Image (spheres, rainbow, N blue to C red):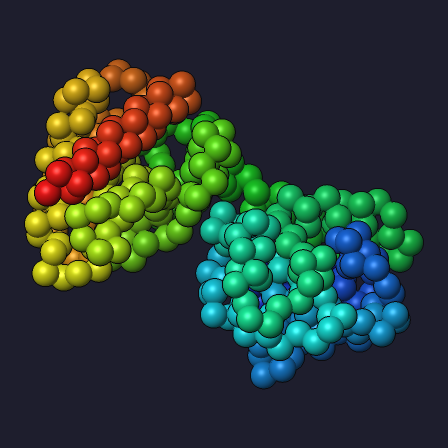
Length: 334
């Protein structure tokens, strides 16, 4: 099995490596069945329909499975719409989300995208496989495969999937000072925070900017009646807990930023929340206030304190709600 060992010595986030391994497993094993797709697979075609899909697998029942694989690359909404529109009746669409992509997308978000697509497959024909589901299926395959080569490949691939999963799960075993900017710790931390605090509208994504970018998480998006289309929300920019505003109307941005900053800081004073005004920057998305301290732990802490984190985030949500309400009341009076 030297070839398998060589193959799996590639970078675990190499999408090409995952494509090669999965093409073999999809064609020669029961992996698709273990992922919920019935039917015996035939030949696997790659980069089908002008590279619209990563794989297309024909089944012995006459149906086809179109597969989109994402590791750390972002799944684009327009790409999904084209894929859904191109699928014919009876086709399966299978989204395999590994690496950091699984934090940006979920089954519920893809279902929302499916409903918005003008011509989309039926709901039960669109499936999402995340890292955990793939790990479970590959583990079952490794245990029951009768061909030793298939079993060895499944074992090796399962080991690599566990390694990917562990990269995003080490954050709570590290001092906060060791969390690297743009590192995988932030994805794992945000993911647990979103699930624990039940933030259904939360988005987790790498954000690029002139200062190098950050891994961001934002939620509680609220309409802000200070300008048409303006919205307020909370955002974690790694170490920073920010109160944000987005303003479409360029001529309104400075005014809205100033007004909402004052509203947030006033609400924070009233609620005993430690907030400060940052250095303002221009643009459609602006920070109007930040938490004045380390939101992930207490004053003297050096490691993650989940109770402190949840308490601070909950208090920030209260401040945001009060500030948005105050702006709405001011708008009604004017």
